[in-house]
Amino acid sequence: MAIAKKALVWGLFAAGGTLSSFLFPALIALFLLISSGHVPDGLAYDAARQMAASWLGKVVLFGILFLSLWHAAHRLRVVFHDFGVRADGVIATTLYLLAALASVLTAALLLMI
Amino acid sequence: MSRRPYVRPVARATWYMRQPRYRIYMLREVNCILVAFYCALMLAALAALASGQPGRWNEFLSGQQHTAWMVFHAFSLVYFFVFQTMAWFQLAPKAMPLQVGETLVPAAAIVAAHYLAWIVLTLIVFWLTGVF
Image (cartoon, rainbow over all chains, first blue to last red; front, top):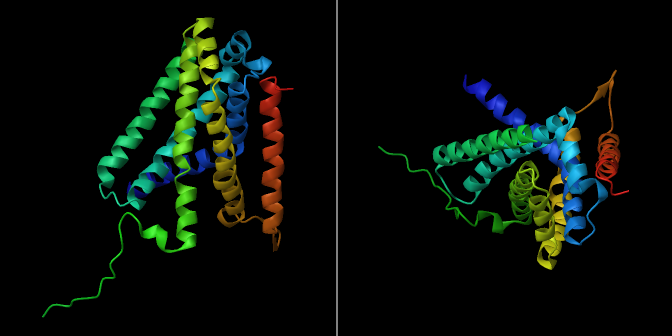
């Protein structure tokens, strides 16, 4: 059981790390474009809504957020330890719970569109 | 009779300052804060989009149009690319060595394939969002 739990957490971490490594530079570049006042046509309200309304769009957006959230949670847990905080039980529970809540929120918001 | 092994004192919160490679490790690992931050930002955008009011979405977009955000995103882009994308691609051949027949695929080829896939994916994201 201990091994199975570890494999699940590590699997999500690895998948999220790969996905965010490939996609986040492009996503951050989009935020940079928006902040510089050049909002791409595909991110105007109607176009963005249309993208998130399709099932493929929902699945892709959920996948990106779900895996990246778990990746961040798992690594933050280790970062806390590295900075000398020795309360792994509390920190792990809090971070994984936050990741789970944010994942549920993502799904709920996507289903509203 | 008690054994009293010598325990070298290690500063709990500042140990990584001792060596350059530890400092690089820490610089790489704290990048997960950026991952979490951009997840939160995307959730905020998603909430604006899901509200069904074009005004809320446009408010989110115009809220981003600030020099401070621009500087932050530019910094994050470079930091993320160096400490996550490049670091992850460099690790790939070590984490998943690839064997074809009797020989191992050279590490450089695996890393190069990752960069190629990254360029293609980035172009797809830009195309989908209408950057060009």
